Length: 376
Image (cartoon, rainbow, N blue to C red):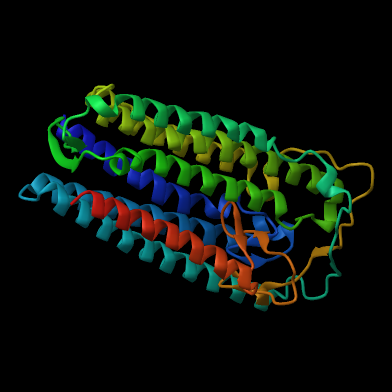
């Protein structure tokens, strides 16, 4: 049982890291390759295809080495569970650094190709804005987040109802065989940790929802109407994920709380706690592959107006550091779509972006300190 669970954990780590990185050049907009803006027809250039293949193979090989190293450390034996967790964290960090290096190589290669070919150099630079965009229904209703509040309230009510029947020392951590390896002194603060994490997850997903809703429009001047429809589908699907994916993430901690309270068997919780992340990862991959960044993989017609075939999306490579970090003091937008992979990022030239990230880090640090102090 232990071997199967460890192997499953390793494979999930591989899928989450290697799979995500390997998909980046295939789900990004075709007008942006490895963070560099280019004409759409460049996507099929043999040299660009070679860059994508080299990048993909590098990421997958690095991931395979990561899996082999982690499996070897585990099967050699002699390591405690804490030591295994530390080694897993170290290997993940190393793998991320290697993936970053593979990406930088592809990014620099793409920049050299663009400079050599003069892509976008003489093309008209246009910015297209739909003034009625905010009034269109591109997001699921935020009222669906009420389901999160119901889950949190239910966890709280059950916890408080069971409080008097709990032992003086509450089991909080189990090994893969179902044995208790961690305890916490009974207190109201102790039983509020999991509902607190559920609330934190909900706030993170609400922030992601707000980021999607308020992000800058991304419309291709070369195909305005189709691009607009794709972008609306993109926003709607991912706003739905913030609701339902976030609910599944919060449900994992609700299950752990039910185990701590002695309501749910630890074996059932273990299976569900492994299954739910798989469902979430599968949903992310499915959304990425079927939707693409900015809806680039969504089928849409040409629209009423003929496409402006010679138009190019605004040339702003200089505002994107390594194609990843957006820094533009002249852009009032706080949230923008990423150039690499799927999702949104912030304009780091806006002071509020740093306030937001500092607040998130402070919340995470505070949660860790509280958990550590209660676990003494």
